[in-house]
Image (cartoon, rainbow, N blue to C red; front, side):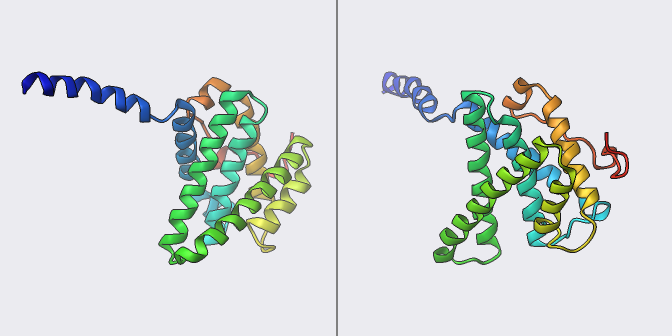
Length: 195
């Protein structure tokens, strides 16, 4: 009997390794956690004017994930797998949030499809405007999506532009390990001092 138990104990690690998530998937989950943490920074709401509503928080979670996906774009297979892990973690977070605010099981799928389309639209729009260094286009996106046409988009647009530059300066290896260092909200340049 003891020999049989010993054999079972040796087999368990084999099964654990079969079901262990790939490092890129774990990195994607870690990046999502960092995006959520940064999107919850009180200064984004108090100092930069993001609305502290369900929609405002969703948009800030989304923009931080978009910035990370943009950083990983075109960086090879591991980066693509990490970006997919990040996106999957983002979708899982949205699914959980929708259920927590009372969206019924039958409606979640439809809402997730709509949110997925919105996400990809934002990825494309932010990527184009940030790549072109078009501050007015970034501000227009912020105004339409995060602020819903209310308030000055400049501070948040500057924050997003600065974060894109900050992420671009970080080593790919660091990002692929699931680590990212966001620039502090107060350290972002003011709108009138564009470089």
